[in-house]
Image (cartoon, rainbow, N blue to C red):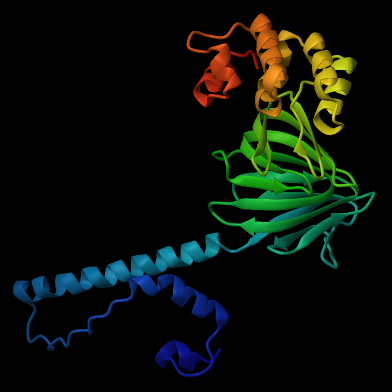
Length: 317
């Protein structure tokens, strides 16, 4: 870029300057600059006439500073720090630290690990044999894509700012810490250590609290969340119910093995079964955690959301 462009608009513009001009365009002042007479002597009247123009100039400077801040905050790169080995961003190896830009991928081999700073809202540790990419880096949306491998996230921001896409579900931060693993087939497992995470795909949603886990499979999406200390029969039957067309037989085994703590799983089953099976889930959950006033069997079978929410708020998890 030549200096002429900054002085009178001629010459070749710099792309970053053009971008800043677009950001600040809405603050453009259309009225011509007034021609001021050279004062013979300073006077209060003349000063009063200058005040509006001084205020306008100050407002323009403030707007420009705000635009520069916005430009800086929207810069779509995140810092990456090497923890072990030689992680790579694209074809470049990270010796100490580097930057991950939107559209780029970070990869670790069997002996390398890295840490990604998620803007100013958290961090992600990337384990060996992982491929993870930066999709969006905005003030209102921070989004990664975990193609394979393992990552651990710690987020200290309001809910629904940080997302991780996987081949079979999207992890939506609700203020949390969690670990997410994806294997070569695209199947994954989410383990929450603090707070809550929503695991979603095309309207299918699982809300996973601290201590809970949830499996996801390509073509299906997230399964029903559970606590890992549930019985082996409970967990095996849940896999059959979620992903192997286990049907009513698998559901009966899940219900028979359920503890009060497993109300997490039973509550999530309401929209995933129908007819008599939904009634059976209602009866078993009611025997473990009686429904509060205002929740009826008929209303739950109709999936009336206020009733479902009211009951959920009474469950121990």
